[in-house]
Amino acid sequence: MAHRSALVPVAPKLSSRQEQLLEALRRAGRELSGQDLHARLRASATPMGLATVYRHLRQLQQWGRVRCRHLPSGEALFAPTECDEHHLTCVDCGQTHRLEHCPVHALELSGEELRGYLPLFHTLEFYGLCPDCQRRQRRTASEAVEAAGQSASLPSA
Amino acid sequence: MAHRSALVPVAPKLSSRQEQLLEALRRAGRELSGQDLHARLRASATPMGLATVYRHLRQLQQWGRVRCRHLPSGEALFAPTECDEHHLTCVDCGQTHRLEHCPVHALELSGEELRGYLPLFHTLEFYGLCPDCQRRQRRTASEAVEAAGQSASLPSA
DNA sequence: GCTCAATCTGGGAATCATTCTCATTTATGG
DNA sequence: CCATAAATGAGAATGATTCCCAGATTGAGC
Ligand SMILES: [Mn+2]
Ligand SMILES: [Mn+2]
Ligand SMILES: [Zn+2]
Ligand SMILES: [Zn+2]
Image 1 (tube, each protein chain N blue to C red):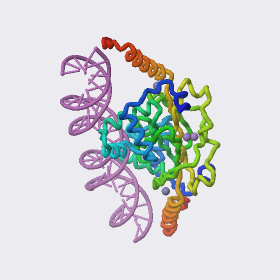
Image 2 (image 1 turned 90 degrees about the vertical axis):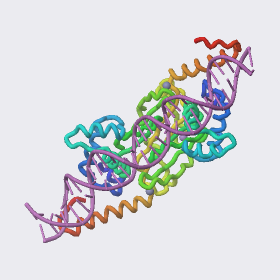
Image 3 (image 1 turned 180 degrees about the vertical axis):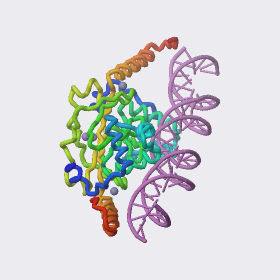
Image 4 (image 1 turned 45 degrees about the vertical axis):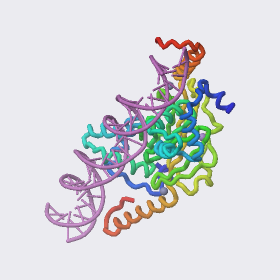
């Protein structure tokens, strides 16, 4: 709290609708898409339209209260900035794991690199091949090699 | 090269179309969207259709040769993985600066955190408010306060 | 060379998350 | 209550990406 107000020069009081949105995000305990949020809020006592959900998500992001990351699929996921999480994602099957610790939490940008910016949040995602997909790709590759080798020529690999 | 082949278990030979795509990305010297690439390749001697561009971008990404990040606007930008760049972006106006050095280049994931994954690439982006937008937000905020304080409302300007 | 199946390609339709429009509702402040 | 401004949301518009599928290309086997 003290942390937040120290960082943000303009910390506008949130409207009740914005509080509702942020609270829904907190309650979820995981990143949610705009559509997810809309679905949840639509069921609430004070339903919120899709346009309003997106409007406020954008506003909250510009105020540094919400951050957004994109899955490889392109889906946008939102979370409160106070939750500092990162992931390791398979570029093939999309399986993702939450990392225990943020590797850049300490390591901040130097004053020179900041260029006068007021830092709000960051995104950091690692991508790789999960063990299963490594196996599958190896299998596929060796099948190709074997098929090619059977014939007569093909010194490629 | 040695670096790459050591990392990637399955490093399939790229098709000529895939080479063409990757080469276009390298030649560009900056991140390009799928649409950008399509526009460039359409003008070339061997035009490439939009569907093919996206197909190969996905494949190259799964092979760890291309990485992708998303602007706050949602636009997807592609670059060769050998280019390890990150940015500082204003959440308000969208202005972005390239960082000189990658803060996580050394700092790799621990074996435990890797969970057997074969690391391919990462994305790291910092977000904040640029000096201009900080000023603007402060100005907007103080106008609001002043208007409220006066309590004699004059909507003239 | 020629043939045929497998693979690749790309025009155009389909998808779908997000944004936009704008008529209506709600908050504000006397 | 009145007037004005701000907020809201239904539905249309947008636009990037994916899907579909018929035609083109490749290349292994003859
Ligand atoms: Mn972090
Ligand atoms: Mn890096
Ligand atoms: Zn996988
Ligand atoms: Zn800015």
